[in-house]
Length: 211
Image (cartoon, rainbow, N blue to C red; front, side, top):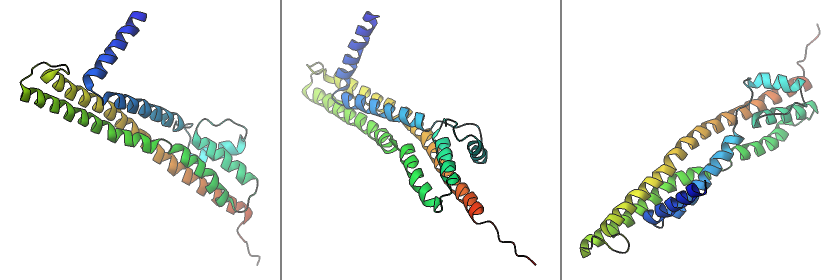
């Protein structure tokens, strides 16, 4: 096992050396990207296979049940506030749901930024590698301390490949999670409207005139 770890360490060092100085920033970007995507994936996990109406009914009967998603947390807290008979329920729900909105949007900007930056870092490494290649051609040095023509081309290709390897999976995951985020935002809006509608109906029942 230790031999394999040592071999992988040498391979990473060789990759960093061949890719140039843009490799450490790309590595940091990859770590930050997948940390943010992992956090968002856990935060945006799906709730029970029930509609919003069914969730409201379920948590109205089971107020002590542990929620398993952020939508269910919102439903449970909204039902608790409604049961307290708060008059201005919409204002309280807006304040509570704002925290949920911040939570589901967390790291969204960061992941999107890294997806955009990573190919540009790879492109920067490509330009630097091509400059080294043309310098070697200009001086007619096929081999030099920095690798000459072969080293320049290798740096250009490796940095480009790494930038795309970071950006493409990140872009796909970010797109999928962004759709889930939009779905949860619509569900939170629906929960708020249904709770306010039901609260208004309870506190202000329709007036029936007597003949």
